[in-house]
Length: 500
Image: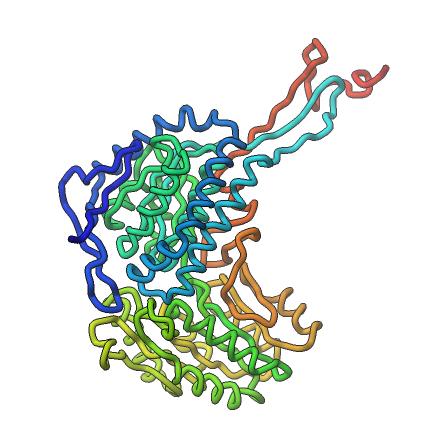
């Protein structure tokens, strides 16, 4: 019998008030993974009320005590890493090694933010007046709305929930409807670690019914959203009308530069991992390869040979290199982009088809696909595909390569392969992305540095590292005057006041 997974509101596991449910099936074979309660605005309202109530006491918890709870949660995540990874693979398809990495990132983020419970630094500054002390401190916002995607169902929620908690906020959490089981497991672990009732509330359901209700609720002053660019724009409009603090992490069209002096074996390995890991369903996926014309042919041959031999299959099988895409709709979208690329005149070098043979018949598998001789203005070189497709764009210089990298509306991640340190640093200076790698692919960000992008990738905020604390807190400046008299900054005679 398939389990029914419920919302978590005010410390209780409860079904949606309307009594509706939905199923999630394994994208590799169609097997039912679980049945989930399907919520709406009424359930969101109950979760927000629980979070508001819990905030009154949670904000007063000493931050080191909050950190102790997160340390316990990190240990539970570590203890259950394998089972969590296997469930993730069943739910969204990524190969088991990548699923383990997803859980590990949640462990790392939880540990990192637990440590911030003994820092959360403010500032002390000298005063311009005598007998006066100045300082600043971070303050929580209150109830935080957290809306997350399906491609990293443990890692991305941890990027948002852990800094929200350590800074004294409470949370209403809506995961993607493709990956609700991972969200349930994360909340179970936080509860077991000792998180008080109502501090994190989980509401399962669709974006239109649950996500919008969170974003539009007047008692949710802050929203952190990761998802598509189109949805993010709608979220931004709604949040702006209500004057909410909003963090958007949206699309990417990331590029790998391969110069004429690059180690081509290393570059090919980095491209394959960045383009086809998680079946290309990463916001940091390398969907463009900007290659110097003198090495284009050799690199293309290497990529075609290696990509053509990659094994598709169920992510739980040890020999699988590429799992399914997350849904039939995503499969159709990827294939449509491949047809667009061919119609635009790009040369299909390998792949380009839906894989239906044998054990792949019941799943949503797409062949790893490489286009060659792509122009920088083609749609497949400009628009996010979110599938296992990459495009080789030939150039004649570093300057032209940088212009191509910057010539899209997104600015999340990029990389450059070169043996010349001078050219590497020119790329660092001139490429307009939030993340840049030298002699590595476009994926693999570490949790202690800021994560996010420029231009249409987001709205300027960053996740991970101490930058995440800036989003989930407000600064309060405090002036303590112990002179025993009224001192007026910028008005009084300063010289007279500071005289002995």
